Image (cartoon, rainbow, N blue to C red; front, side, top):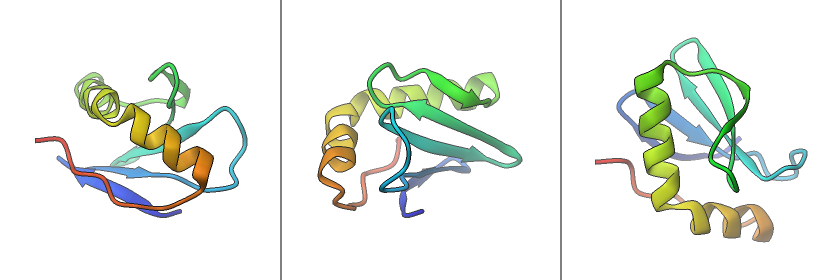
Length: 82
């Protein structure tokens, strides 16, 4: 699974050819969540509240980039949350 970005101990990955709906994986320590790119809601797994907010804030900034990456199956790095 390619790593898209990393910030504050959170790793964001996308697995191309993965099952629908379009989503990315957010990993924070022992926590792992699948986040819908379209709704920005966790569809599987969990994250602590603060980490979930950071992931949502980051994904909102790059939502269109993530959706394009999912649809085109073209990997590229995205900037971290600052």
